[in-house]
Amino acid sequence: MKVFIAICCLVAVFGQEPPPCESPKQWEGRRVAYDRSKMYEERSKVSYDETNERVRIIEEVEIGQDRDYYDVLYLHNIGKEYRLNFKTRQCNVTELTRPFRPFGVPPGAEFEGSATLGVSGLPGEFITIENFSGDLMREKARYFGLVTSPDCYPVQTNFMSNDTGLVTMSFYDINVGITDPNVFIPPPECFK
Image (cartoon, rainbow, N blue to C red; front, side, top):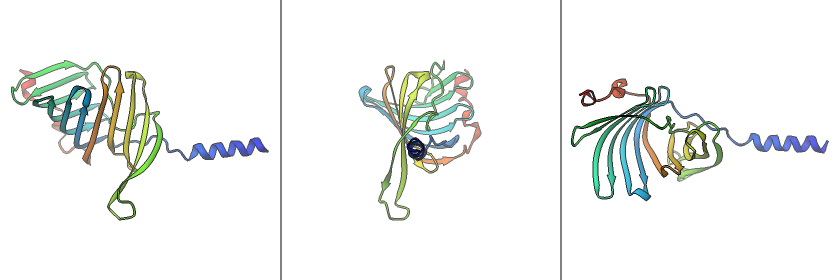
């Protein structure tokens, strides 16, 4: 009988921990990314399509004192990256070497806890966020992320690996869906 009660208690405790939520598969929004060790900061507009493994980023990048502006299209579905420098109008087309990395909670991530951002108790003045972490085996990297609850929109994503160090991305102004499906067509300069 004691064993049965102990098993019931364990099931109840583990059953309370939320599984990784599923973020929207297609959205547009804004992002700030930085890597303090490299004095790198990026502010960008993002069009995100997890279903087809495509991401378009219009970015302002600052490395140290240098500032540049890019239109970057990651087409993981065909293994290509198109990077257009807005200043020079030069486009570089390269093969993608890393796998597609979802901005939401990866499968197998573990729930770490939840919190309230803003003033709790006042309607419309707060959101609930959940914290997840996990290993990204394909990249030998570690993931730490915050998402809204209950809808699982990314708020902050952190990746840590020996190759990249710690990369932190914060998301805001997210709208579900893609307003212009042509956003995933490479710029004309990339075909010259």
